[in-house]
Amino acid sequence: MSSAEHDHVATELLAALAMGESADELGLDPQQRDHLADCASCTAEVAALRETLELIAVGGGTTLARPPASVWEGVRAELGRPPEVTPIRRRRAVPTWFAATAAAVALAAGVGLGAWIVAPDQQDEPAPQAQVVGEAPLASLDGAPEDRGAAVVRRVGDHLVLHVEASDLGGPAGESDGTREVWLINVDGKRMVSLGLLPAGEAGDFDFPERLLDRGYRIVDISYEPDDGDPVHSGQSLARGEIA
Image 1 (cartoon, helix red, strand yellow):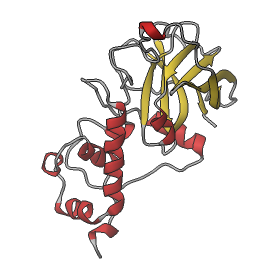
Image 2 (image 1 turned 180 degrees about the vertical axis):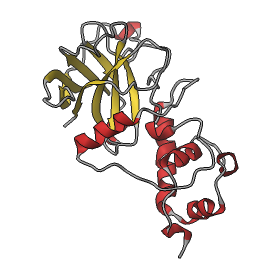
Image 3 (image 1 turned 60 degrees about the vertical axis):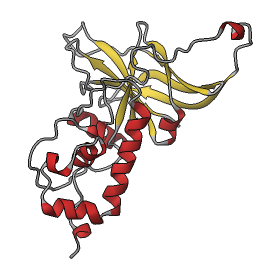
């Protein structure tokens, strides 16, 4: 039996390889190394994860972290997919987990998302007409889902903009000091990226790189984030919907 026929290497290990960690640093055993050398599927996944990292890691100092299991359980439930189980022997914990593909990355680090500078000689030009590209009805994730607004993707010139118009988001009982954050979750149930914080009033616009949409980042998620300094998704989703 060839090594390619064994169980695939765990996603977090492939993610760490995509981030530049070596097989020695990850403590991969000979069987895992042989599998990686022979398996086209694992090789392709490393390449895809590396490409996604290049797409979204536009700012320095990006912190990659593993989101809680409850986030992925909710995504799989929404997509009607069973949980993924990848049996594999692990030598040590991977310090950073890229399967969330930069779960705390602001796509334009250090500047407001969705904003761009207009040159003085362009200020008098008429604003481009916005074209609706897709919409996602937002609903709560409880047993009896309730309407929580909508997210609309519009093309404005050569940009895509995600407009979020939420309502009655509320928050966890007894918690009032947190913020609300907008995320894009990939339909593969493995990757997510933060677009930024939802401004007061439960509405906001976010720059939406078209390549992310093309690569399956179609699930809009609004989470409650406690004021604890942790950039990882809290696992407390207030509303979610898939762009169609």
